[in-house]
Image (tube, rainbow, N blue to C red):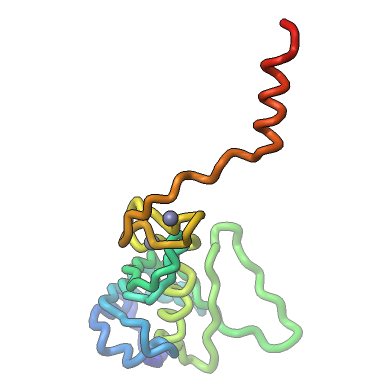
Length: 169
Ligand SMILES: [Zn+2]
Ligand SMILES: [Zn+2]
């Protein structure tokens, strides 16, 4: 979805229909569930604020099972005209997120994809309190209750402990 920056009125532009964005994700497995974005001009810049909700397939960091992660991205981006080569962009300290637009065209779909990717969990978990894999048999402890004992203590440590009990006090 391309937005003409010159079309953005003084009171801004709101996009709250996910279908208006077409297919923002290059990976068809990612699903856009909802958007509520507000675009507002600040001189030549466009401030985009709001929220994106999406479902993105992830692999659980503990049990290694794939699962659909519900992603919620808070958007607060300043989109500035792409500088012509040689120019450098002066960024204010409070502008954490900066994106570019070119020739009066702001690609909102690309922005949605970038912001969704940034909001992906660093350590995805399929569920709160996922039990993970058994370190002994490798079984998924969410699915099977294996009877493995926790790993035996290191025999060298046991020998030291044995020695310690025999030392005179
Ligand atoms: Zn898991
Ligand atoms: Zn096991």
